[in-house]
Picture 1 (tube, rainbow over the protein chains, first blue to last red):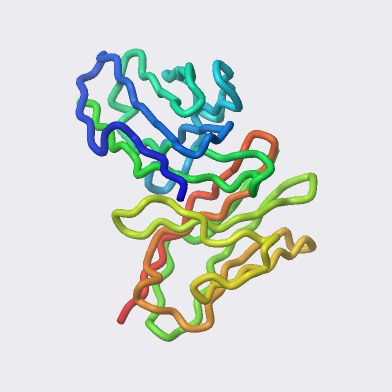
Picture 2 (picture 1 turned 180 degrees about the horizontal axis):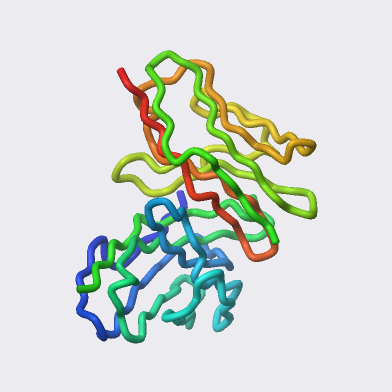
Length: 114
Length: 107
């Protein structure tokens, strides 16, 4: 059973703080993704990674960066949090060739920036 | 550019009534389409994908390339079907999601 875990379910940060969101998967998946989920906007892709130390920008990368030093871990970084980054953040992983594009999601981190 | 459109933000039907959640897509190649579901307080999970052509929890979805649609259907809605439903299109950069439809099944 695929498990994708995220470091926090709820997080409250102040404007200007540096924020780290961690995601770990235990199925040796090559691909990992970060989305934000907002009512009425659906899921929007922030960044994704197809391999260790590789990263690709998604649809809304501005204000975010990522790090993938190990295959199982994909971190999302908000360099200087702003109130418009208040959102639900979802991490996902997938493996090419095994139902490629079927993504397994973490439980989400609800981030509030005050 | 690929795009997924779910025209209904909210759909409310009575228990036992048929349900149809609409999804239209725009894609130049051969599409790979999915429906994901998120029940209250649960993580987003795959419901079904078009290539498997199976029925999951009574739901089916048929790919209509002529109409570029992948509507999700169930003949008799149940209260436990209440959830957020997302249609998604697979591509080179992963999945493109629609904005979602909130399905409410009234008793």
